[in-house]
Image (cartoon, rainbow, N blue to C red):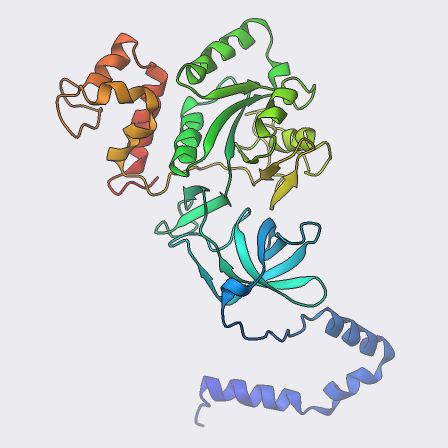
Length: 369
């Protein structure tokens, strides 16, 4: 007996099943009929989209929230309105090799019925907070942007984590500078550090103030330092990044004056928290401005930076670079390197130099983390 090809068996099976009388008769049962009607009501309806000849004529809006392929867009001409948008399959962008649509993006959209819309085009980003794709999850040939058009990046660490690595802070700072964003170091949970611990922590962070970066010590629990932080953000758009467990969600809630983000418990064994933020949202601040909250970041790579360019993002290196014997100089092994000498003699903070070496190594031969 000859075998029926697989694709013909599939067609025959579907045809046979579709003509069986009992299948059509199931809807005679009132309960089953109601269940079927309910399912049909939940099915996404097709939307008739008119052809757009020139996307520049479409309204301009800003992406305020991103979750599971849905983008809440605030029309700039009607700031009190929010449209739930999807991205058109053939949407265009002015940002090459990058995430198509992210929180903070300015987009051209087509309004539809029932408070919905379709995003047709993404405008050029003024600034962007980006990272290389996390290894093992996506291609590393494209930039993974976390937030766009941000003015300030809040590089957040926790005072109750005495084992924190300064390299994390320095990576945030470099990533902010690469994206054209002002970095501000925020030490949260300062209420948990007392006496000598607090003194050592402030001494450790003083190096950042010495090289020109603002450092703020705050507590989302007690409100300490929040007034100064709020003043720094007034009228600006800020993004808050940090490893899980640093109290990002609690800090967001304290700054916005609303329990807008869910908080989670911190594991006692390593002072790390579970990821409690599963979407990205742009939240209004009572004193003016916006705060972008993004999911916690465990692995943070720097995109589009060659190893030989890294020294330009360590501002304290600049006076010494021109004194190096070799040009270019990696400042890792070359003889008569003025940067290495300054790190040994105290002109450059040894901890910052150690961060430079770690980040330089992570960039690899092609300049991606």
